[in-house]
Length: 599
Image 1 (tube, rainbow, N blue to C red):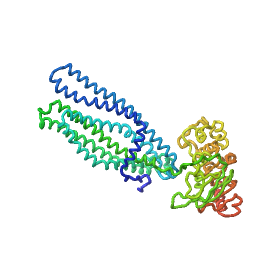
Image 2: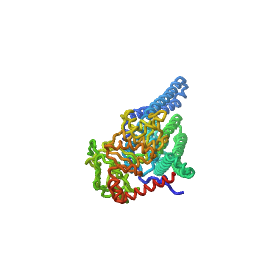
Image 3: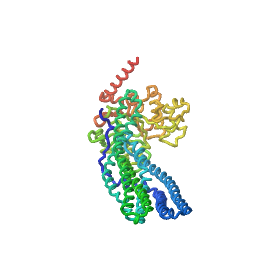
Image 4: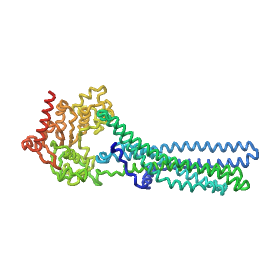
């Protein structure tokens, strides 16, 4: 089976960068006081818990031989108290850190979403949306515990180890050395496995990204899948991506599962050595039975945080691979943004000038070259020409969805590159061929660009664009809930709602990019009156396939050969019998053929 774009993994060869952790600490630092409180409670619990082996030693060596039952019960109660206090403090700490972890998730995810809102069309056009979603949702969830509980646990376990070592040396330094003898073996093993683990989890994150990307597109395009009977082929592709994810996951987990048996084996060996050295090498004269039992307890406590740190190492390696992807997204450059000293574009009249504009999406192909033209306030301009000639590019440059390579695009004499994006785009209305509607009510969708719009304004806008008729037929009218993507509406109905949304924002410059292509001829005829009122007094750029939509425009520009080859009114261009004339005659023949076929 041929490879598809979801099989293409991202680069894994970048070495571990400590800067990722430093950046992560910025988010952690916002909650440092709560983390310090949690750490303090945990440290107190550790100190109290470390007295348990001392209590045990005293009971075995002193109280039990003396046969003092009341005294033994007192010390047993003291031992129980240490356990209860540990549980209480651990519960409080858990609640604090759960809240901190969720706050960190919120902050990272908010920053990611805010940054994604600023990225240009080019970013979204160049990668599957599922790969973006997995970073915002899955990856952020995966690092939250490491950045909250993980840090506290790491510091706490180090603190725990230090105090255990102090208690052990205070009790019997020779036996303490026996416990510590296994540490060099563990350190050597971790050094051997760490890079392999990191690369394994990076591979898992890539395969997870591929799988999510394909799943997202499969859900969005399920109608097309069923239309072309692609269920079996798509299932095969998904199965391949799932299998690739499973293989990488199993490999990564295999490395993870090597750590705890290693720690467990070293711990068991050390425990055996304690009794061996204590009973046979040093002997009862040097080491009491209570001391051996207490040292065995300390050894268990010593290797328990070692085990915890080993497991944390696994999670840390995993989290680092996710942090790399998260910060990679945050570092994605915003190619179209406000300049440092950008000024606010004042209320515009609608004069548009292209001044020697050259533009290319990439270096291999120039779309527009040295293009110049002027459009006066209130003029309607139709852009026609072959597919890929640059019609949509021209209107995208007016809205500054892309920056020109050379020259300037000006509105009322202001270079669009020198004004803020908000002040520019808030005065423009753009209607695309594929109109997007959002989950929510019809009224919410229409007031999307003007949140303070009243119901009277919404209804008036819908009547203007002929949307009120079909909306009123719904049982809940304007309060009708729309599902994601507007699947319960026809494409023409979604387009009319988008028209109303554009009208209510009262734009000074209007762009219609194949905006009526999804509307049937009868509805378009009814809509034309509303369109005339919509265009009245506004500078408008219209890209349309139907001649009826562009025939009455003030100017018609034929876009081809990296520029504009013809410009004039419909009658003027038809008289020239050039490119526009050929286009119109070809479309008229198409319309006549359709009519004859219908008969």
